[in-house]
Length: 244
Image (cartoon, rainbow, N blue to C red):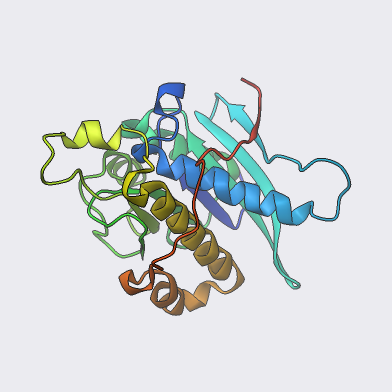
């Protein structure tokens, strides 16, 4: 099936949909998709009277995903159709949902249309890494599932750093990634900064996808984390969920 107008970008945020996983490190993909969707909604409705309108997601059990399907005015001359995806399959089977959504809406080139946002324990908190090369990521079960199901790993990987548990800690990796973000050591502030980087990087990419090299140089540098980060009180960016 090919939708009309065709979808320009599919933006997948990885995570687990059950409430007990809300705001955990492993769910930073979900958090980021909600964050970007809220930014777009605020911009689109900034001149509308009344209360701010939340972005609307539809729970599509036939697609195993929550879907936010919108038109996005990237530039005066560039109107894009974006489909945001939050799989309902649990992390390790994310590929099933992504495959269903891509098949339902139709696509022409995964390497140019699919963006997946997820947590990266091998990168420091507050950092963003963007890759679209073969073998970009190994060991992330959600990414492994998507690559295996699609038989393709050339899509855009947006890796948000969450770091690892302190070396002095006995905490195991699964317990760490399934733990909630903390205000200790400015962890939430660092993640908030990484969300901002991700949103800005995507915004510039949507305006000029041929400028990826410059975008990576601008937003994926460890040296650019400011010392005085804005304080983040919450990583909960609400959406209006229909059909559940």
